Image (cartoon, rainbow, N blue to C red; front, side):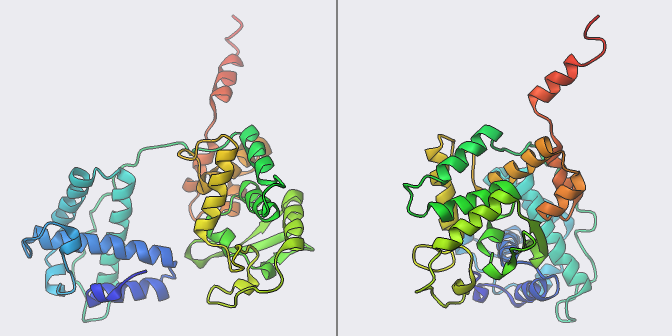
Length: 330
């Protein structure tokens, strides 16, 4: 939760703008608040406005727009250098903070009220660190089958629910928040599809194959029908319920998948819920010959470049390509 009392007014105004106009998700707002609070605390140190060095002890409620107007690109570079030297932050982490700072200053220069308006934007020539190119970690086809087998173990009293959760992750590539947010009314059983709400509150349709439909139907037969909590999470509408008969939480789903991975003999330090999304995308691309644009639509990626990480080839494909070289038989 964001404690707005700890923020200066101009920061809260930016968060309100991001929520209502930019339609950013609660998680994005939380990240914006964290990144900008950290940046502003550094500015107080950098501008010698405090003798404290522990960020936990530095307050930013007293910051005025006069201070923000003094910030130049060199001060932002100093912040990025501080992140690197003090926290050994990776390029991806610094890139996210740059993105937040850039959005913040764009708001102050273009969309803020006259009270917070800036005339010059210090982020105009701010460059983003070059990210390390990493291939996504994913389960092999055999490991995926093993995980589904574990999820369907009838010794688990919640196996119908847990199998449905795992099946949706591995077949549809949905995000954790999307799965937790599914309501029964979101499912069109006649058309074998469901609607999910992804990043930026964008709704998209996911089509369900036979294993998904079967797993959901089997779970609905045993899903509690009485004693479901009527709460802010609208648990009575939720597809997946916890044992406390309320909408299942992110943490509970993470625990379920972690337990299944361990039982399947897979490394929980290497694999996680999000890696199941990578797995679904990779298997569809490698085995299903799915068009990259269709995959982009399925995963809900705003940019095709995000989807392109799944077009990587494995070592067997590389080896096979070399062996098929027409010069190989000479």
